[in-house]
Image: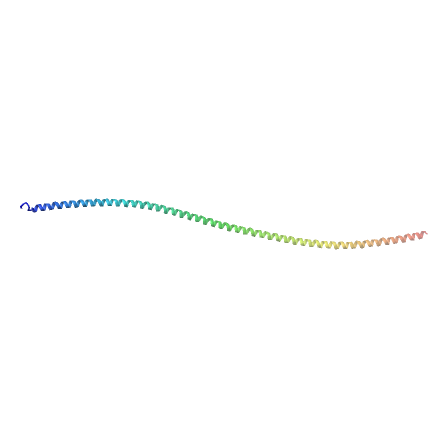
Length: 181
């Protein structure tokens, strides 16, 4: 039974070997775990990098969209300003046209008034001339009547003179006849 007795040194050695083996296994496991973690970290880093790239492309896209929107807004504003300027110009032109029309109308009304005044003056002058002519005519008529009356009187006087001459001549002839007889 002496072989059965285990040597404490053997036991210690056995124990030390077991411990070493266990440590090695643990180290291997730890190494594997580390490797796994490193790979996972690499994958994660790749994923993050891809995300960053995607995000950057999104940002670039957004920025270009913002720039496009700004351009459109500026374009719309410029268009609105142009339209407003055109509207103001049209309003100014319309005012100017109305003013000119009003002036032309006023000038036409003035001219018409002048024409009517002139026509009235002409009518008045014609009336005055006709009246004067009528008066002259009436005076002439009266003169002619007076003249006629004068002529008639003169004619009758001439007849009377002739009769007187005839009577005197007759009387002289008779006297001469009587003297001859």
